[in-house]
Image (cartoon, rainbow, N blue to C red):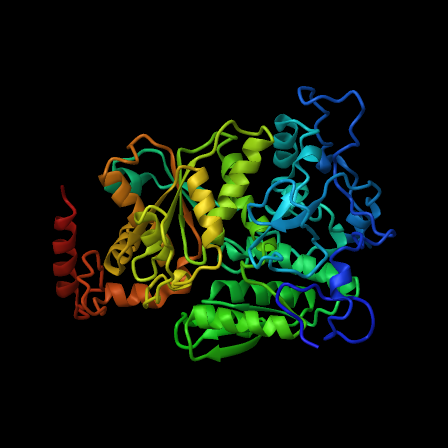
Length: 533
């Protein structure tokens, strides 16, 4: 009566813990409901004379439609317009498998590992997508930005055909996440790096304050679909160092699905802890680190009908890859030279690669940027592997780091990350605690207010600029993964110079002054004189 991690949950019968029908489902037809035909707006069925070089008509102007009736909402509107057959599909396949490998699974199956125990990947029907040229996809994606039409107001679901093409719009759980700010770090780039084309993709400007929303909307939407299909999914669970649990609990709360969170005790910020609690998650504070929590959640989800939400689950990466597509959109489909991504469990670096690669493969752009994965020196297994020439990977015992979300010594997605870096001629760099906190303070001093993980990425940028690898004119994007407001304690400690064995060179503590005019004038004059150049 046990359910193994890579088994498939059955939706037949009345015993949710039974695995008796699991194996047959692996080879069963895709169990879509014949009464539910997901609407793909606004792609027409291709004509027989269509060629890759032809130019389909651009999508209709959604804003030109008549306003929906007052007694309907945007879901009702999407439901009413749900008249087209879907043209595209996706499935699970073993990661980096031979294209002719017979092993594959429907996305409606609950499976996390291949038969050999390896990672899975979501493979899209690229031939079907290629029936439309790059110009068409660029026009389609651009037409959806800023709309409130369900579900395309989301930066993730505006690329639905490339993410989860067969899901019904009515099953989607979205907070219109994504569409995050890509801003020009003008002063920071000029003052500290001598760069004039430095950009920060602020994925922390999202519903729960981190990039994890991008993947969680996809995963929870699919769980919502599975539950409607009668699959025995009682809840969704994750191990987390903070941001994953915040995203999971918020989206599950929106869907009315129970969420279970395993957190390492006393190792995440209060701001991160309070989010799953406030969203009604069942939170277990466990006396171990993230790797210990990850091991436990994998064991638990193998025994109970709880859907695994960690990035071992490749559905998450389908949402996260849309941040890469957004970057290209925001540059009007021009490709940057470098993209620097903080790395912990390492799913995100592969997700960015996948998004860029799909755009190249489908003709939206002609190349992909070079990727840099930045790790904290206290949790740097990928960096050590890279420096060893990709020989003999060894997990490490992750030590405490201010970049708590990447405090991971045995990353699940190590193979994915190596693949992405090799394919993009990528680099791995690391940052000490002092380096990352100094970089964070320097960025904040130019108006950013970033998280420590972004500080790790900026530290990598400093090193690559100083070594001449990144040129002053290279267009470079640093991915900011979470909002700085989640990490106010580390900032407070830094600016109070209250961090042991750290100089805190850029600290800016408040000045104590007596409550009289003369004292205030004295300190102000001293300050203003120091600013005269």
